[in-house]
Length: 135
Image 1 (cartoon, helix red, strand yellow):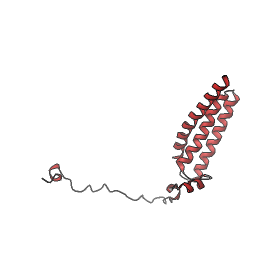
Image 2: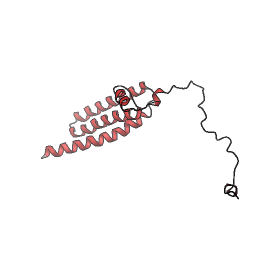
Image 3: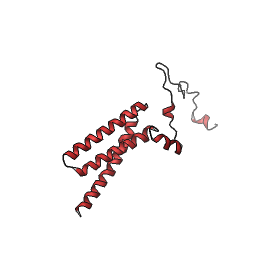
Image 4: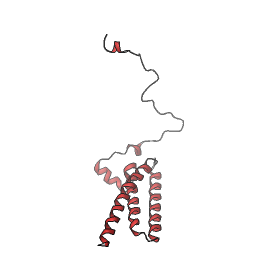
C-alpha cells in the first residue's frame, strides 16, 4: 500500500510542477523577441531542470524529482505557447492554422519612430451635457 501512496504523491507533484512550469514558461516567452533568444531560453530551462533533478536525486528525495520534471515539461510547453511556432511545432501549428505575426514582423531601424495610431493632441470641440442631449 505504501507504493501506491508514493505514486499518487509523485503524480500530484508532477501535475503541480507542470502547471507552475507552464506559467513560468509563458513569462519567459514574453522576454524572447527572436528565435535565437527562444532557443537560448529553451536550453537554459533544460539545463536548470536537469541540474535541479540530479541535485534532488543525489540527496535521495526521489518523490520531489517528479516535481522538477513537471516544472521542466511545463516550462518548455509554456515557452512554446508563449512564443509561437519554432522547431518541430511549425508543422503542427501550420496544420492547425496558428498565426505567428510576431515572427514575421520586421524590426524597425534604430531612430525610427513608431507610427501614431491614435492622436490625442487635438481632443476636438468639447460639449457640455445640454448640447449632447440636443437642448
